[in-house]
Image (cartoon, rainbow, N blue to C red; front, side, top):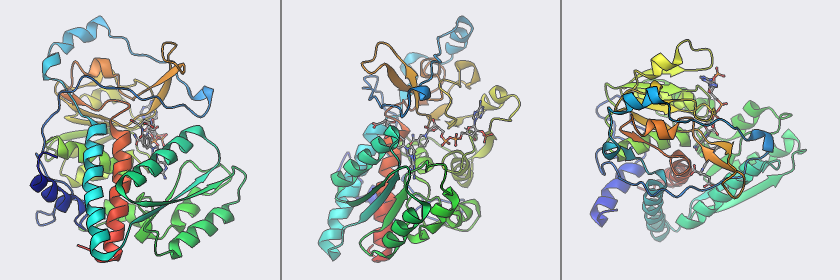
Length: 371
Ligand SMILES: NC(=O)C1=CN([C@@H]2O[C@H](COP(=O)(O)OP(=O)(O)OC[C@H]3O[C@@H](n4cnc5c(N)ncnc54)[C@H](OP(=O)(O)O)[C@@H]3O)[C@@H](O)[C@H]2O)C=CC1
Ligand SMILES: Nc1nc(=O)c2c([nH]1)NC[C@@H]1CN(c3ccc(C(=O)N[C@@H](CCC(=O)O)C(=O)O)cc3)C=[N+]21
């Protein structure tokens, strides 16, 4: 943070109990607007993540085409900004660590997060490891349950019930996807809503969708996307926003959040006709599809702000592991047309984890009535 007084005011805004903003003018915002403006960071250091199966590795690339280059003249390299999720997430973790030590000193309580991992998907194991590391870095106590792929649904439900009853656990996360023999809905419904730090419980999602209602938690990835827009001073009110993807965990809640911020929102999905045309209307684009480099330069309105949620492994013989991660947006093309974009990796991913820590802290503060 630039100064400790700024840090204090931001933590107050970030950790206030109204954890989401709404269209009501009297409701506090999730985040301060216009705090820090755009970054100029072209020295991004990519991090590799091993995919779970080699069949998960895509081969699609996006080479710059001549027709696109003409359109690219609208935005010069110099005016393009990288929205640095890795750095922003670090700043948020510092703010969270400060709040946690204030709470520990004040009432002797340390927030606790329980993570349940079923099966041996390598990517899930990596995310869970990263979550644990992040918890350690801010002073959240983490509890972990690892079950084999063959575990029964009852076993998972039993662990959830145990964590629901454990007062030292303030947040419960069941890593998705679950093995196919489990009923995901039933498992997610079992997490008590006061500990639903993923924000996946239908009650929390339902409240997110309703005007004048407040969820206890907002799903971490969409919350991280909006947080980035706020922290980079991107105005949302009255803007045209397009979300590509409508999944329960990213696309749908992202569209709801943008709407609560008074954007005019369109949702593009696999049955949408003319996705390119609709996407080109976006002042703000959130892409959460799972298709490497699907959004090309020609899909982008000059000057648009792009949040790329996609994390897709693609073959890359030059990288030591034979693949690298790319987003749903062709970064190279977008960087010549958009005004700002999140990189992959180092964009939304680290923000997802930072928001999980934030939700866990909010939960502990709420249950102990700690202001
Ligand atoms: N950075 C982070 O923290 C996170 C990143 N991710 C990444 O985000 C991406 C999306 O994840 P998730 O939402 O879980 O994925 P899902 O597969 O659950 O959803 C994908 C969505 O994209 C839509 N879609 C698929 N193909 C097309 C297409 N060709 N054109 C238009 N829409 C399409 C689908 O439409 P339909 O509904 O019609 O099927 C669906 O709504 C993935 O790459 C994932 O790895 C996910 C979570 C967190
Ligand atoms: N219950 C549940 N909640 C989730 O939030 C959830 C989930 N299940 N299942 C899987 C998806 C995916 N997800 C990511 C989190 C962090 C990165 C992340 O940190 N990515 C790094 C790269 C990898 C790394 O640095 O390790 C980056 O983009 O820079 C990515 C993806 C959360 N998800």
